[in-house]
Length: 421
Image 1 (cartoon, rainbow, N blue to C red):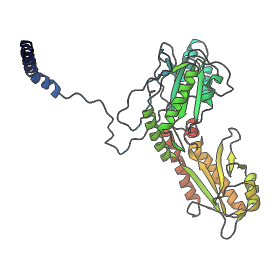
Image 2 (cartoon, rainbow, N blue to C red; image 1 turned 30 degrees about the horizontal axis):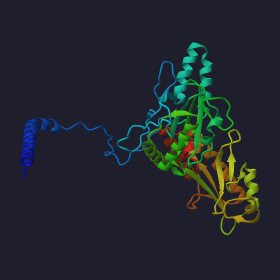
Image 3 (cartoon, helix red, strand yellow; image 1 turned 180 degrees about the vertical axis):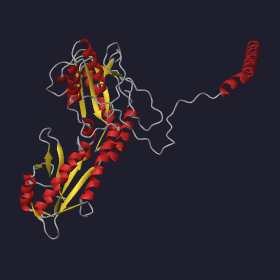
Image 4 (cartoon, helix red, strand yellow; image 1 turned 30 degrees about the vertical axis):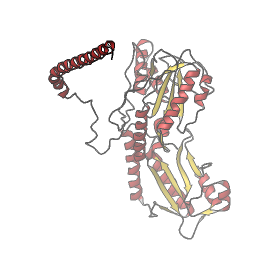
């Protein structure tokens, strides 16, 4: 072995010894600081606030229809801020809600405010205009006009506001307006931040600086699924990319939870009242006779396979007349066959005045039973006397009160949306 090799070996050994010595020195320094570090780590950090869901079996949502979100900017209309949940007492049954995820369709500019108009917020705007320029009569006219105009409803819809780079016409939103994803979609536009929202269709005129897409969270077909919410977001993203526009995607996990809660609430409040007219055995009602009696009483045969009694002023169905048997009514069926009875049906949530409508239906059922020589009975085929009908009327009133309590006014656009198939 040469002297060079021996020298290299010695140098290597010395280097290894030096590294080991340095590492031990560093280890002693770390050990001296460990007691203090352990003392800091041992102090528990405060837990984030969580909803106390253990005191009750289940927490149901409440719709706060009269509450207006806070205003943003000087003189601006009450608004919700894109990317933040609008102020509401409707709370999904989840403990931790992650923050909304921003979704920008190819632009760096953050989305600005989009007003969520409610009767309460419009009252504020109208009051300001009243003090500045006009008399008190205009205030009531403005409130009535806005109340009768369809508006985005953040309580029962998933909202995705868009901010086009330049004002756009309804034609530019065609892909969104004609999208079908299993839940009703609505698109609204407005010309500026203080203008009213306008429900858009393919033939809507004008150009709109702000647009908001809305998807219903629940109806009688059930809650909106996460897959439907994701599809809705993709539809909006495609529209935004084509405009172009920026937008902020809401927390879809939170909206899916809201949809489930809303669906459970509506299932508990969904009340339909039936009064049955049944012929005594073995008698039956000829279809032609039934049609004549029903039409004389103001009913119209509907393609849905039932007779409908319609409010002539609004066009809304007040109550219906269906076959006691499983067969649906049709002109051909009524011409050829007979039935042993019919059912009057009243849908509480879809009526502006359920108790008054029940009184009307009760009278119509009594008259028809008398005309046909039939009995007015309940679902268990027990005769309905005045006391029994009074009890049913109380149930109708109680169901209407329950809807009022959660800010779903019977017969309102909100109720018609939630209690539709």
